[in-house]
Figure 1 (tube, one colour):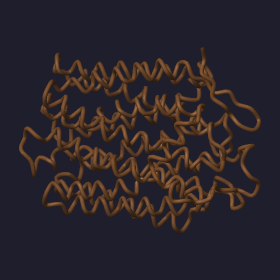
Figure 2: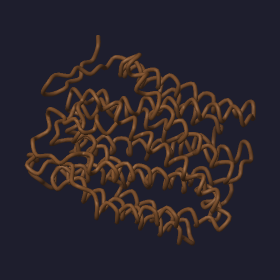
Figure 3: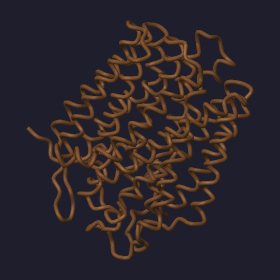
Figure 4: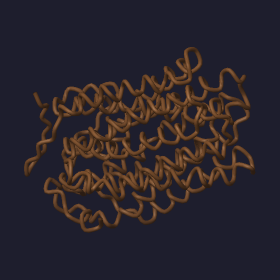
Length: 422
């Protein structure tokens, strides 16, 4: 992997630092960020249940997810632009410190509205994942990106395993204990990055002038959607993000209500997701790409995700823990395959000077779906049936698969372009 990372992108400007210097911090950021998610997500419905009536736990748990996504939607494009202008390192450090503050506020909450404030603080500085992807995009050749994004995803998968395992172990100390632990490890990562990370963006790389209108998320997203080559991938990303948002926001509540699982048992779901990410993206993705190619591998991943979502919905009928585990595993495997392929395709549409803008815009569009989708999912869960969000998510993935199947990447020596098949 290090040899692949060391090969420069032919579009990169001479003088960019070696990616090896930043690799450790970038992978640590992905690992610890995913571990923080894994630490907090299993306890979320149990924390919410302390402040609200039982019938409102599902809808208000999804409202917390929506509040984070709303803040991220506003901030992500601006953080992407700022990383193009000032570099990836300062944006990453600020994002990590924002997560620390958000976790601390969440842990100290003695009312539901304080939980919301904690998620908003974290969301407004949620530029760490998009900045990591931009930093990787600074240094990787287009034909290596799917594989390298897979390695990054495997690192995040390891974090998803570690988070629930640690969270389940320390949850008996109090529901806030996993949150404070997430704050501590994220703070340690910020300090590590401030000391050891080297900037990946070339010092002499040209950047578009910084203007207030470029920090406007609506204007930024409108500009990205006008890029013909990028538009179909962004639509696919939005639809798939809607399915992920409904699944991740409700799976803990779903397992608690349908199967009577505890915090420790719910943690198993997130450990399973992380394990699938490691196996698929770290070990199998390269072989799958050689066998099927990037576009067909992405379609295959989407097909597995559909099977997984409908499998999870079936738990309402069969009331089987095995059905839930198999459904989550199929979805996680499919998500791991498709996310790497999609991240590569999106990165290949951007020049080295626009990686932050494109990755931030993509992240913001996904955040927009994470605002709407959890709320819709929570309403469907509470008013129709607990399986309804998973059925709707499966339909979204089917549509995204049909669109993605018609999209292929054509690369040249200077700049890649997307072509929609007819």
